[in-house]
Image (cartoon, one colour):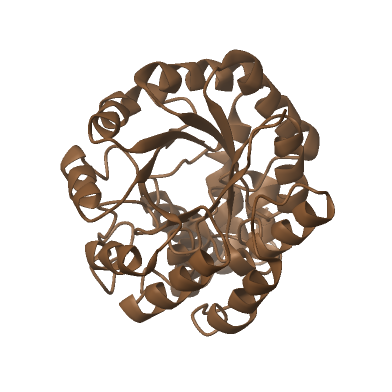
Length: 345
């Protein structure tokens, strides 16, 4: 008998990247309330880069994330309140504060090769009585067996589940299957999947993850997340319902949230434009998109060239400052080429 799926809507965290961390309490209350009424099991709320993420490097929040967490807790009647924490950005004290404000679930996120830095945060979450999931970001960057080895570390620290996190939206369907299967064969705890739609494979990859045993499933209403967006909650709900796998989601209510509540908040729709497609094609962290777009505008270069070079350098989350460096280098190279005398050998 298959375990019940648990859907976590990440639009009020991953979507923070899209709006440059400018969520208001009114927007959080409206969307969180709609998701709760539609039967979503978990609603994640925090800065796009997790607890403590508001900074010059990652982007300053308009409203303190603690106020957003407090607001979400006040409107959730059924869904559990989740937060994200990246060790090195968020601290154990941040986690304790979030717990005191009503957060019940935390996802501790590390680069796919750095699970060992999550130990103190996972153990602290367990001490605080929280459900905790390990998040192995940029999962496309290492082979399945190596990903499984990292997942075993998170499980040993006390994680209730470990995620295959397709941060770049770069995984193909076979690559998704191989990674989820590797975790399934290696772990006794739950398995999760977090997808981005940069290659238009988010729903397909999510369904494959479910086929292979993933039960903690991330999505974002109307795809409201970084890059080309996440697996769209309302679309996933409709497909699961057609497959007889609906875990209690109200498809029509999710459609209403996606159609009426989210568009006024999004600055642009989740679209696979050329820059977002480049993320998946080159395997670049989805949250780099808005940073690259700003740098491209500032330095007069193509955002795709920035992203391709960042991909070649194998940048990971936390290296957003590399984007400015690359943009400046590209601008200088372009300027030098324009100064080069015509016909010079």
